[in-house]
Length: 251
Image 1 (tube, rainbow, N blue to C red):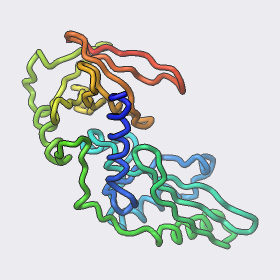
Image 2 (cartoon, one colour; image 1 turned 180 degrees about the vertical axis):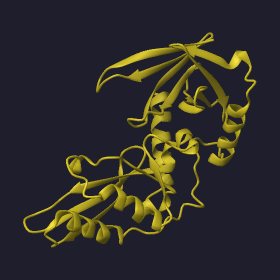
Image 3 (cartoon, helix red, strand yellow; image 1 turned 60 degrees about the vertical axis):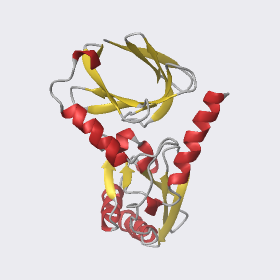
């Protein structure tokens, strides 16, 4: 029960951090939108341009900044949905948080018959409703004990940049080397040494040696469970909608 309550607390805390897209510094924009897979109509470029004009930092799904890797709730994810009706090009721009909850939605429409021009005009109308980025004072804590993401990031970067990582902090899995870096109050991250990318962040659960884990994935971050077992770090990775498998990282 304590583990469940702890997990619910983290989710609730993250949702309180930002209530509007303007509260976010980062916006993740996917390469393709599901409703426009066959033809993009330059919507990806148009959305990125509109966001940058409003001072947002646009993030590519395959190149996540370190502070967002450590705390995925610093970013919102954008999507464009096709809501067109007869004789009118319509779309909806939706922003979701790290728990996939919708935080802001903006609609635009155009009577322009040319699809590219029509969708671009509709996107302009929708984005005109979006406020400028105003996330400078946003608190980014993940636990009751307050710490800023800047402090956490600096600590991780310092350890990753240290080329003489002690052997006791090196773990191996599938022929690759990984290292750990402490962040705050028994929290730590697991880092791929080859590219200095954080692949998972661990938060202590109520039971000893069990952790709530945020897995950093190109297909989308998700929550899972991790364990410490002697010299091994074990993570339960999602392999399907309802299937999981464990990966062991050993010293």
